[in-house]
Length: 307
Image (tube, rainbow, N blue to C red; front, side):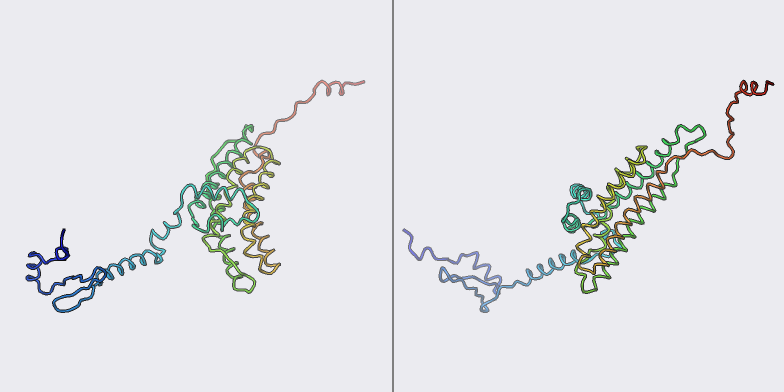
């Protein structure tokens, strides 16, 4: 059986050679199992953690640099506005066409990550759906007229783009500016950011895409019924979302704000219907020849005969 002296740490020749080559090197000697002391030929030394502290400082600086705000002139600044996946976009579209009372669209769908990807493509799709459906509606309504010659009306795409994109940007800007101004009063307690407001308006326009396609059905009463349904659905999303932000304001200001929001939203739909889907009116152009009705010569001959 080994004696206690055999179990002690012994100094080997390699360690002695190393110490002789570097007298300033530190050694670690353990005199008790539970106590460890560091000693050197010059005395006790302290553990140097300067390198680790420098590395940690470098890491914190890198992480801090990532969290710093990026300049608006860089591509990364705008890239963050399109950082969404298909599941999120579909969920927000579903929430915009299925308003639930008491369920705030911004807080439940877009506050965690407001985006411009969905609103941008919804506006682009709405522009082309309105313009193309309007052209098809005009063609179908005039198809039986022999004097009608179809010409593609490409200018309607430009007009639709101006109407949709100006509404999707200027109206949210006005609403956000008004709510920010009212927030300075005592009653105003909450407000949304400009990006959240634009995101809300963009997704609220999705319901008009299938509505504009269904406007091809040549029934005037059905077209106005579809407008009414679309305005109620999309308008409900806006009212449910904006009402909690303005209800603590004065009654007059809150009521006027909600009325203006709903009227502007309805004005876009009614304006698109009246301009792009005009009812066909049969008119006779001034230069077109008129066809006279045939006369009953037999009846005139009998009347002219003497009795």
